[in-house]
Amino acid sequence: MSFVIGLLLVIAGAFSVGTSAWPIKACKTFSMEHVLFFSMLFGLLFLPWLSMFILCDVPQVLAIIGPEKIIFANLFSMAWGLANILCCICMVKIGFVMVSVLLGGSALIVSTLIPLIFKGSGVFANAPGLYSKEGLISVLAVIVMIIAIVLISKAGDLRDKQLGKKGVEGESLSPMRNIMYKVMAIISGILSCGIFMLNTYCGSDIIGAMEKVGVTSPYKGVSIWAVGMFVGVIMNMVYALILMAKNKTFRCFSFKEFCWSLCDGLQFFVYLIIFGYGTLMMGALGASVGNGVSQCVQTGGQQFIGFVFGEWKGVKGKPVKVLVIGLILLLIGIILLSFK
Image 1: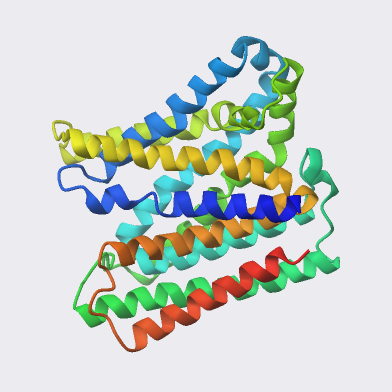
Image 2: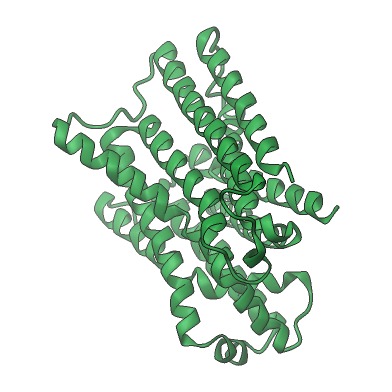
């Protein structure tokens, strides 16, 4: 029963972060860099550390964790932070559709299968092997979900063509540079799994430090993201400031859109808390199954936001059929991955 509850928590959290991009679509004054900066500042820096200071004696917890483990954890967040930057660059160069396929597919493979090959810490250390029954089912599920991601991305491309939208088509590149940016998108997908690997390989040690100082509530998991995500968050904020300087948008401000940006950060914060707790409840398979399910539900959440903001209004025929098939395969993949 705890596995099912944990799975539902992961799904709820993934839907939260999958729909968190709505401020970027809703904002008229703010650009992507403003939403990125304020959401990171509030949701991934202020809220986690405020929670830590409320829950425990922070210096004592950091001393128990130790500098080596803190550095190790932040290497994962550094990878995640770099992935976000590479993703933005690749979208400009080769387009959203191509990047979403390459990034989503590589992230799904790595985040789901790596915990079965290299065992995580704590409860995740007991995960079954890649060639076990559970491991082979996971491989099958990943194949199904990659096909789903390809179809969903293709549906978006067909939608834009039907509506006569150019979207982000990318620049005109030489064959070699085109390949280079596609490889960069794949690397971005692999690096983006840093957020999952942080939870898988460092989470139990960080939570253990909280338990040693007497914090026993489920909310103790906030320490993983406060301590482990720091470097990656700072990287994203610095990148946002660089974009503001480049685009000369420092003086753009809207209080309403500022609040929307904070909501974006809050949704990400909620995701991290219930995702971390949910994977622990799922037991040994929590890392592999939780990571894969999270990756796919985020994809579904992004399509939901597209519907809400009218991106599919007036679209009919082949784009809709391809999207429906993709979403059905995504659901089948999630069910397969969750088979225990």
